[in-house]
Amino acid sequence: MKDLVNKLKKTQADSKPRKFKQSWDLTINLKGIDLKKPENRFKFDFMLPEGRGRDLKVCVIADSLAAEAKGQADLIITKNEIEPLGRDRKKLKKLAREYDWFFGEATLMSQIGKSLGVVLGTRGRMPRPVPPKVSITPFIGRARKSTMIVLKESPVLHTPVGSEGMEPEKVARNTEAVYKAVTEKLPKGRNSVKSVFIKLTMGRPVKLEVA
Image (cartoon, rainbow, N blue to C red):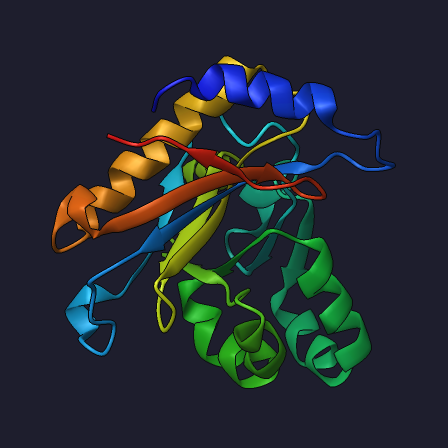
């Protein structure tokens, strides 16, 4: 993308100080794509080459994997805590806001869906299943560097590609990697892209020139 690093530097320099670390948010507007066709819709996790630039919070709901997850996950919910948590909607909604990624041991997914699905599912926080005899370490490590890319009803994708304070070159590499991953999944590739913008959370969108 032409002059991407320079645009990131200028945007960051012009940004007003905030009381929180802003995200770099990428928007890709699409054209000529029929989203009524299931094959044109997608949802996938993408590991950013330079990471997110901030600490993402990971919650693990586990039984046999709880011991391994200890010290790696930010929060561990045990099998016996699932149903009580499901009855405490206020607490569950707070967890859905505070944690970026949720993982659930595969043998518990039925119980998780029944007790927690109504809240977590509607907020895009339904736990990703992890087989009970597989190491959870790589799942957590990957999640801390990943972003979710979703294309459903609207021909617009929004996804974070970094955080304020990251070197512009790193944000640029993340941006270009996401753009490449998205265009590879589009039916007409880059010809399906109408426009691309990047912005800080509270900043103005900056249009990017794409080839």
